[in-house]
Amino acid sequence: MSDWRKSAACVGYDPALWFPGNSQLMRREAIHICHTCPVMMQCRKYAETNNQICGYPLQGIWGGKEFTPRKYRRRAPR
Image (cartoon, rainbow, N blue to C red; front, side, top):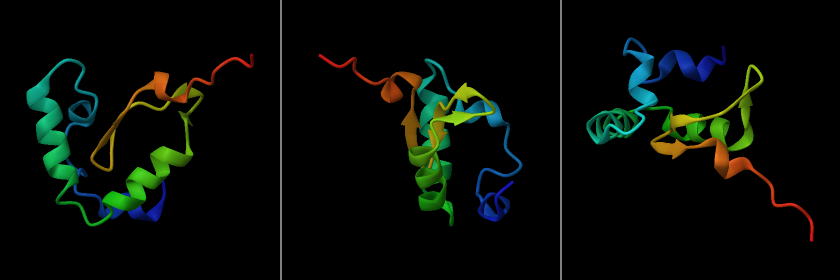
């Protein structure tokens, strides 16, 4: 675990909140918590530079921004 994660505002919350599916209420709550976080930018940078976690596509809300696996698909060369 990176040191910045220990200082994150999300520590102690149910991790499911950052994977809201179709729930707009959960999405808004997670993003609100992110915007109070002292390490929000480190979290977002982590998500932007790591497209996988433990071999699975990175997804969910990271640093106040929602990431979905499709954002990382590359276009086939023409």
